Image 1 (tube, one colour):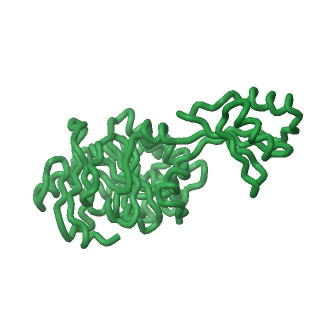
Image 2 (tube, rainbow, N blue to C red):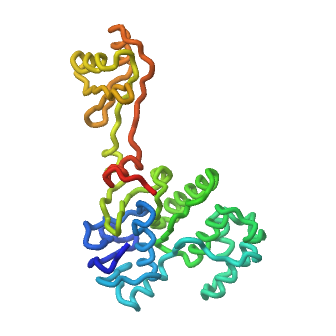
Image 3 (cartoon, rainbow, N blue to C red):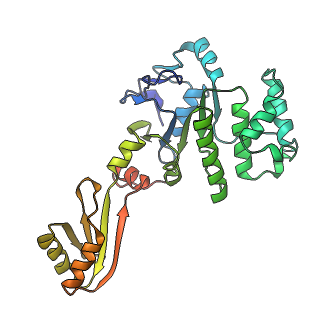
Length: 312
């Protein structure tokens, strides 16, 4: 992603400013929500965007505003209210989870020693506090990274690909942790990922990015309204059956010769009762081989947004 050619502002607000905005590279403003996902292909610019928030990258043009603060001094103060994991968290392999966190507590000047126990419990790692980091699973390593990012009680948590490489059990653990931190702690979380199927289970707002540009942003409710439902029917003499469905039931039915399937689409995602379709076809003498209700996914929407380009 080439930020040199972009002129704009990235802005984030605290939890008390629900109407505030995140602005990115001259694109429409983002209404701030508490659990946001930034989705895009590999190389789309997700990590670069998060690095701008954390100060690991500097913009070549424009400015960054975080919690109403800007400029070097202001951003340094504002970033004390954020926690982040960008790419892979680094820990001492032969230290235990507890000792690693204690090391960082002292290094960062956090006075309260009980915070180590608190964040280990919050991330479900307290029972493994004496286990060496080198013996941790990938999911446990990710959770320890989150524990580290929570030690100074941040208001804004930035996570880059937190579920990448996890097995199904690790993904479920991470999902539950994110939801709990968001709901119980009131923590604002921004997550970047290209694993869209899982993010649909936890994000409340989405931003889609490609080649450094915000293509579109929407709430989970707005995305749900854009999802399409349709019925796939495989029957004998499909072309004639589609004509019958269109004429006699006034359905938007079309026959696709390539896969010998009838596709029936509906307005406002209201699916016509499938039992009526099957009964109609039976009474007209067609053999019904299969009938399936299909709902488009977040991944389908993103691919369509990119004009059919697949996620790498």
